[in-house]
Image 1: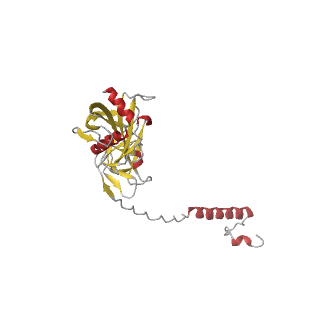
Image 2: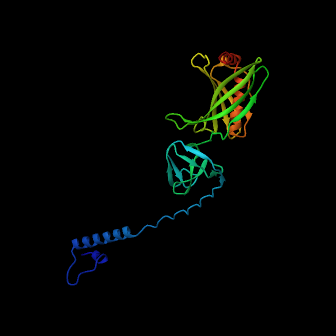
Image 3: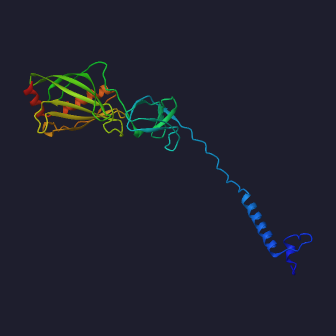
Length: 284
């Protein structure tokens, strides 16, 4: 070019003048090459944070049966975001291997023998209400008939369309009231799952007197609650207050489920009012 600017950007071809369109083409090619080099230059990858080591899990040994309340995942650690290693179906009966200390997680084994964890609210602790032999006892209190009884295990029942199951008992009584013999039979059941399935280990015991002339039904029921962890039985309610004594009944300590059954009968005995005893005397 007359001003010599072409010489700064491109070499001259020997024996030939350089035209302006050749310079534009050369410059465009140079720009594309520079852009390509920029694109092809890899960006440095961000440094990955080192993985934190998983905290050790302390297991408190426990061997106890549980019933699964709904379909749940088994986790590799006592954390909801940990890896899923298996699954339990609703209604499955499982055996725990321990408890993760300081958490609500139950240690279990999968069907393939792997160690894992499930959250405690997804499983209900199961107790065995069966008796190896009958349990006999005696009851006496001021103003009440003196009675002897025998708790006889009858078998187990399932509540239709529910996970709950019960252990059932017959309880023949032989009493003396106002110098006369008074014999009758009560029935009793113990829920083998907590009465609030996802709640604490509190089980319900019902003591029933049948053929009672109540307003809406013919069964007088005393309901007692058995707290397995506290090893205690406490009065809850009577279904018809007109047949209740109204006596304040203190909780009773119970080291075993057999002792809980005896304590439940003692509570029912104290809760039955004069109207209940009068009706039992008429029936005898």
